[in-house]
Image 1 (cartoon, rainbow, N blue to C red):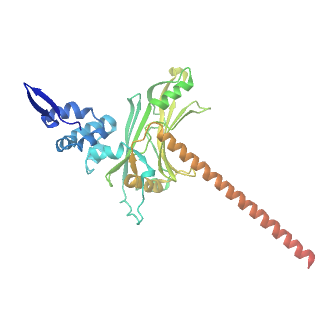
Image 2 (spheres, rainbow, N blue to C red):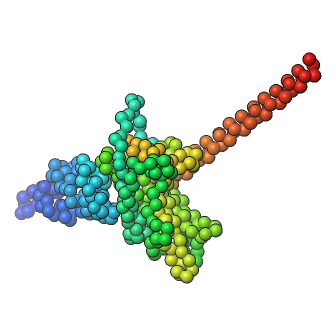
Length: 336
């Protein structure tokens, strides 16, 4: 906080501090212009600002402006159970999940209580304009969820969402615009733990056009641990009859291990609840999420190469053993 301002009136000197400004002016004309990180910093500056910065409506408006899906009744009902309400929801969901910050306890951690459902609050923007927002509730107690590969699809097979993205002329330029301006947030809420986590990178880590179908495949990613990652995929499609305008055809999420296998519901729920409870969070710089994704892919390739070398060595050992047994057998037959 800046030091008090000194003013002079007719030879008399007086100091103006933040407490001299009417609280309504601070709250309606200053604090509403700040983002979540700035609000948190301001709250620690003085008792007055702490009181004003923890106002429920201030954080509620900030959450709604950041994620329009927050206004959904199911999301609102879940947020009211959080220890700090919308402030807790923002602090859980706004920073990027960083698995490097997770420090598992040396003691056996108490497993989180089972949750009957997970709430997904998803918002897709293009050039800061909302083009898709949806809240999906996934039941986690059914046998179908527990044993099937974990995947949540937000659009029906014949459902599409129009966008302002035009695939016309230079394809490279179009894909570059998608990579730069198509931002996504996929917040998962666990009503039982009263926690939330954003499982999507803000910007895509991969944008490519399928050589056969012509669809644009946009991948968002969050590394959950050294052995698991969460993939959010957005499929864009269109045709020349529509003027090259792309529509959203698919929006889905899945969890896979380092070998590329999709986890089932039971395994994914364990990983997600651990990320909700113990995952470190911080704001990442531009390009850092992509760098983490590429680092994970490199580690994945190295593991695959080690597995191939191990299998090759085993094959050589098996062949050598077979030859040795064959030679020993015929030597015994011929020399007895």
